[in-house]
Image 1 (cartoon, one colour):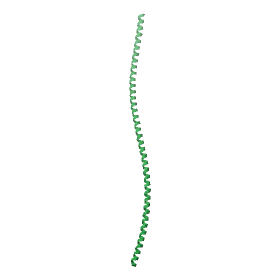
Image 2 (cartoon, rainbow, N blue to C red):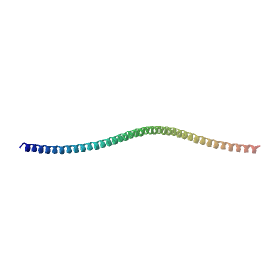
Image 3 (cartoon, one colour):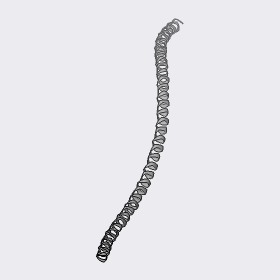
Image 4 (cartoon, rainbow, N blue to C red):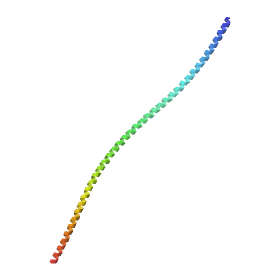
Length: 140
């Protein structure tokens, strides 16, 4: 009986050992799969970090470009305002010059009119003097 009990315990122990060995194998396989998953996830995390760094660099570059464009826009807007001011001054100067020229043209027309009237008067006086001269010559 003792031998059969020992054999039964031995059999039970062997079965338990085999079962534990299977469980250890399963746990080792699960550990290996978990380690592979961790390695895969670490690779994905590294790739995501690299991508994030690249995107951050692109954002910084775009921000710098945006700032440069904004500066250029401010310079161009200032130049536009200066040009508008210059155009307004030139228009004002042109208007003043046009007005002055218009006044001078009016004065020249008036002077021409006066000169024409003087010429007409002088022609009349010349003709009268010629008639007078002719009459005096006839009398002499």
